[in-house]
Image (cartoon, rainbow over all chains, first blue to last red):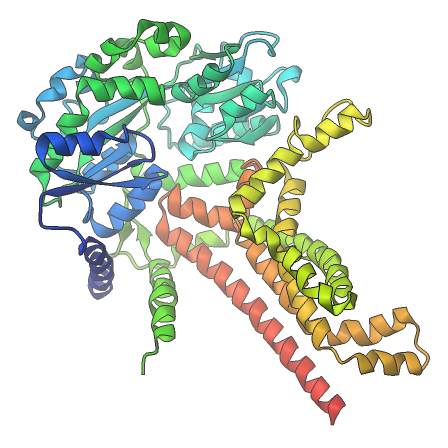
Amino acid sequence: MSTIKTLTVALFASAATLLMAGAASAEKIVISNWDGYMPKDLPEKFKAETGIDVEVAVHATNEEIMGKVVASNGQGYDVLFVSSPFAEALNKLGIAAKLDHSKIPNLANLYPEAAQLQHDPGNTFSVPYAWGTTGLCYRSDLVKAEPTSWNDLLKPTDDLKGKMTMLATDRWLMVPAFLAGGMSVNTVDSAKLAEVKDVLIEAKKNLLAYDDTTFYQKLVSGEAVLVEAWDGWCNYGIAENDKIKYVVPKEGSDLWVDTMVVVESSPNKEAAHKFIDYVLNADTGKWVVENIMYKTPNKAGMDAVDPAMLTQYPNMAIAPADLLKFEQLRDLGDGMKDFSKTVTEIVSSK
Amino acid sequence: MMTPGLLWLGVLMVVPCLLIFVMAFYERGIYGGIDWDAFTFDNFKRAVEPLYLGIFFDSARVAGLSTLLALIIGYPAAYAIVKAPARWQTALLFLAILPFWTNYLIRTYAWIVLLNPAGLINGALKSIGLITEPLPILYNEFAVIVGLVYNYVPFVILAIYSALQRLDPSYAEASRDLGAGAIATFARITLPLTAPGVAAGAVFVFVLSIGNFITPDLLGGGKFLMAGNLIYDQFLTARDWPFGASLSLILIALMLLLLFAQALATARARGERGTAHA
């Protein structure tokens, strides 16, 4: 079997090498990020300051970049932007490098809470870039009563039926039922999964759609009046219609964290650390809040933001200490198979 | 001799298919990736569990329905184009394929604009007083079928057009001369002789539909899983490549079977025609 493994790895590696053949010998790093998730001129400014070239690759989803780096053991990339459960998997796979804090002085810009994340206490292999909650986003002018509980979504009153959406990504599709049932958002126990499955199959009957990308537009157009949403995305809706509001239900939320990771096989770790240090400056943090409308663990960045923004988008004012009370999604490891099957059963149910 | 064409096929088609084939017999690693030490048939055992078989059957039903509708729309359209004056035919064919100049996603989003509860169709029906509540015509199976038929009808038109065009008009004339009416001539001469074109168009629509995942995702509102979505989810959401690979192999086998049946039908039709000429 090892022949097959060697062959396959060789194939992927040679493909990666081919892709990298164009790289010049001058100091240069390749990063992969979500499209539009950092300032467009950041690579340029970084080069002006350090002389290091940055090539920006984009990925549409965590899973996409995971597919690429797991197959090639990370070759071809120096810095990756991924959500925390994926950073955790990269660490366990040995693809994420141990970070040298002495080379990232701007870590001092972060809130102390940013070093207390459940997936990586002390930021040993990942540095948080943005964070936030998952909750209910709704049209306060079109709902009869303001939602306060995940059950308002899962067991809706008649006026809400057919006018709600839930997130389509498997992990967040399950979150509302886990929280409503008082369970961990990382549950893989089969009896509990079965319980949650029944709740979500019932809930599906009242949904307009599962939607990860356009739910806030559906609120703006009035197609939907109550949706499960990431706080930052709800802000996009609030920006277009101030009748749109966001609430973290009484049962709580998950804490999602998008992070930066240095690739262990990178030949440019020094430059990669410099890049992360540069991203942690106050300007970039401020840019994230103003343009992506996410909260950032970067205290210097948050402090630089116009306070009017926190009034217009109240969820931006959630204190880091409050965020830390919520459980983070973790890599499910061996439990992923049962978890995925449950999601398939829910989504394919009639 | 390795021609560029063969190299292309080899690198971009045969090698990836082999990778998929090999992968299907291993385990998902605990954190994604593949555990190459565990040779197993488990992925195939999982693939035939009722849950996944049900999704395959459901996709086949939706793809079949889409195929039927595409034929019902495509055949008359192709027939009309063949019967149109020769100088118009190119222009008409051009119109049939014109939608392909726009990106698939944009065309699909256009249907969302048309079908959504606050969209053009519901808006128009509401304003003329035919309905008071918006019709539920988006984010369900109906919308998925509309999207599939719309996107694949041009293939059917082209396939049937080429079959109709190659048809020697003297067969139909002979049938008329021997006293058959228009309907009988169509049913007993034209349709059987263009069957290979119909089969080619049908297989095309069916194969493309059953593997489609964008249309069910966007027009089905993610509430509806087709085989394509299931495979996509295994590779990109569950990061269970081996299981995704085994599902892909089953889908590929299904498609090959259909293509083989179609090739067989075409060969037989050719054979019959050959004897007719002799």
